[in-house]
Every structure is written in structure tokens, then in C-alpha cells.
Length: 124
Image 1: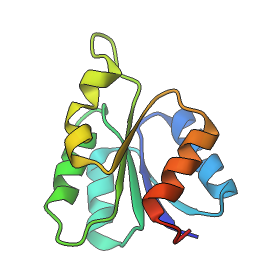
Image 2: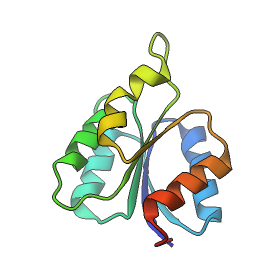
Image 3: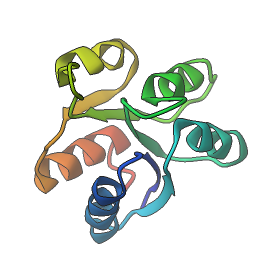
């Protein structure tokens, strides 16, 4: 079992991802903003961080840059479906160089779980 921080501003998406990860045997801590996610990262240790890129305020790129500055950082799975006028590929540009892996929404449950297992390196 891994401790995973899930940051996504969309309740339905966050709930669906949490359900898949929980069924996969993981403990999931949720944050609805990048700011809350960063605060949690300052006070707790996580085995993996999953962050949406496009969120109001401090977004997933802010979370990724915060993690990138850490000496010992957990793997990062960056996710995005894009937004009006911003294709997912463009939203994930920074993630492709700084995150451990990226997934474009929508993704299937098996794709999420296999990516998580790869990033955890068998520690799950």
C-alpha cells in the first residue's frame, strides 16, 4: 500500500481516481487546490503525487516546481484534459520534462493503475 496525494479541483474526477486507487489498495489524501497540496507536502510524506495541471490559483505546474526543488521528492504523475483553448498536450508541456509520468484525461482505470504501479516501483 502506498500513500498517495491526489490534487484535482474537479470533485467527480478526484472521486473517481480516489475510488480506483483505493480499490488498488492505496491510501489517498485529497487536495482540491495546488495551494492545499503544497501545504500537505510541507507537513506530510507521500509515496506518490498525482496532480492535475490546470486548476485555479496555484496549479499543477506550481506543485511540480515545488516538488522539483525538494531534495527527496516522490514521483509525480501529472494529469490533464486541457481546457477551453488549451489542448492537453500544451497543458502537459512542463510536466513532460519535470514529472515522472503524464496521463491525458480521460484515461482508463487500468492505465492509471499500471502507471501508478510503475512509478511506485513495486512498493505498493
